[in-house]
Image (cartoon, rainbow over all chains, first blue to last red):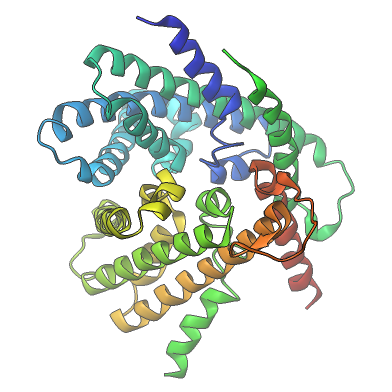
Length: 202
Length: 196
């Protein structure tokens, strides 16, 4: 097992090819839920969990169902259905199992159902690791790593952004630029800063 | 007829999905590096919106309201798969340039929003015009953003050189440029609508 390859995937997904800042996946929650730190943290945690879990599920679907029967063109349809119903299932499970937890995470889970970052990580996994002929174990570990680290990268950037926006509340910004436009410009500056990581070589 | 035309126009100006409603931003920013890419994405999304609007409005009375979201998702995903396969077969270069953002149309909020907010409540004919208008609005926004980015970042428009000896600001083609351009554009739209 090549451990250094896993490290490369992790650092690449968290910093260099960050899902929000360089791949533009999951911008809606990034702009919508980043007004204060606490909701941003909860959103990030829910996204990380759902991304990891759906990476595992879509790995199973692709390598045991789509690939053996040569119906890879049904990828979009099957992935989105399974992810959407899985998120609903988790929501229902948490609601029954722990109402306190549901109070915190409930609305975020509902928002995640059609989050493009979650679907995007599943598609990227299938493009990068599942199309090539690898052993099941190897592709499983790669998918799991990418799913989890994409979630971590998402959470980090969301937290940074919410911290900055909390401070922005006290700034005197021209009225048309308030809220969303200034958030995009802050994101642009952050993205520039994150591009500094792209010089990494392994 | 005038009413139908109104449905079409509102998607382009008053309820423009990108600038007024801020829906479907991920593909907007990711693929708008050149006008060709932006236009291709716009047409693909228009086809999906149109198709899903027609089917959803045609069977709106048969879908139980509790499971309507999964039904919509299946319909949308079917059209996305059609687009994916057609694009791979006839426009392989465009398909490669757009990459994973073609399957990602399925989670584009515009499509879902139109199915839920409009097509599930209106007749087929109205939904067709709504779908066309929203698609046109989305395509226009994409072409505008990608035009700005291509002109500043590459010194070209539609692949043709517009200004000679122009040192392109590479930043605009890269990720930060997209965020910068959309931030400023939304600011300008806000300014115009507040002044009115």
